[in-house]
Structures are given as structure tokens and as C-alpha cells.
Image (tube, rainbow, N blue to C red; front, side, top):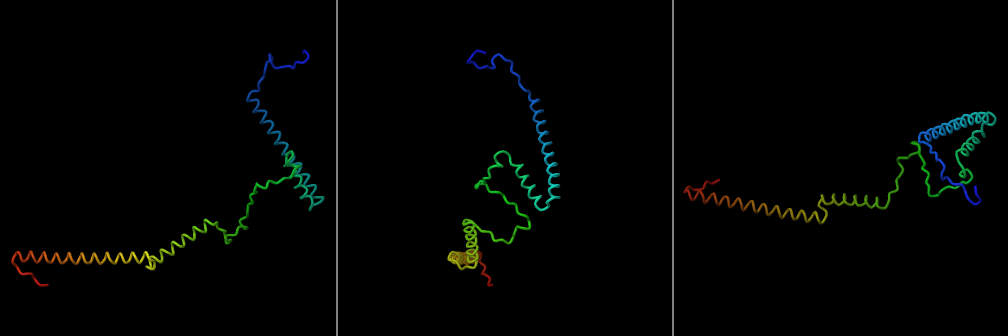
Length: 177
């Protein structure tokens, strides 16, 4: 090649990998990784058994540390930083859950409960007739009853007067009851 020029791909035949070949390579790689993990687990279990025979108390702690180091990849094993914004979810066992524990209510929830209780108290007093509105309603009902009784009495008197007038028109005297 002449001086100062870099080689280029122009004029060369390009080869492309078919999707089937890519899938086959991916599957082979996954199987290889799976076999390596199985080998590590089998080898780690054998090493743990040997370590437990020698030192039963400290052997299990060492194996936990080794497993945690293996799980971390790359820089994660070197740097131990905990994100303060990430809240780890703690799962509780059924035996740890206390049902009698007093739950703290929010301000809105407390106000809503107080409002409902006040409404119930008011309705009880209203039904007993102890509130101003209940007294006004009862007075209004009494007035309406009185008006209806007066109207019924007046209607009855008009009916009797009409009957008497009809009998007088016929010429027969009214009967006494």
C-alpha cells in the first residue's frame, strides 16, 4: 500500500452471518456458561465439605463470603456503596406480624373518621329531637297536621251541610243520629 493511505473495505466481498448461525452461537454460549456454573457449584460444594470437616464453625462463614464474592461481577466486588434512595424490601414471617399493633393514621384519615363520627352523633340527636333543625321540623309537622285536621273537619262539615240541603230539597226531614 502507498504511504499515508489506510486500507478500506471498498471493493472487497462482505460476508454476513445468518440469523440461524447467530442463534446457534448464542445457544452454545448459554450451554457453556451453564456447564461452568454447575462445575463451580459442584466444586464449591466439595470444597465446602472439606472445609467443614476441618473447621466446622468457621468453614460455613468462609463459604458464604466466597459465594458473595463470586456473585459480584466487575467493579461491584471492589466498591461497596449502598444507595440511600433504594429501600430494600424486608419480608416478614407470619409469626412476626402483629395484628394487634396500633396503626398510625394520617391526618386526612383521622379527619375523615372524626367527620363520620360527628355525623353519626348529629343523626342520633336529630332523631331524638334535640337539635334545632329537628325542633323546626317537628314544629312544621305539627302545623301541617293541624292544617290537615282543620281541612278534614271543614270538608266533613261541608258534606253534612250538602246532605242536609239535599234532604231538605226532597222534602224529608233529616234523620238524627
